[in-house]
Amino acid sequence: MPPLTDILHRTLVLGLLGATVAGVGVGWGVHEDTLRRGQEVCSWVPGRRFPVKA
Image (cartoon, rainbow, N blue to C red; front, side):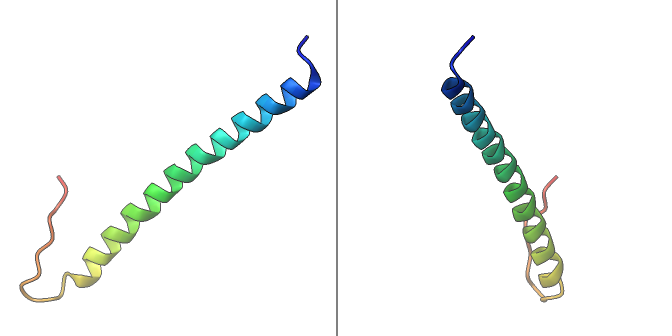
């Protein structure tokens, strides 16, 4: 059986990795939502065109 410090270290590293992956996913989702809302708000400006994602 591995020593306790090894188990604690692996737990910490994997926990931080999971938190990082989750944070990147949430950040990307918020970024996309912010861009979408900005396009909706500015859609009333005449002559203003935004690229539309397919």
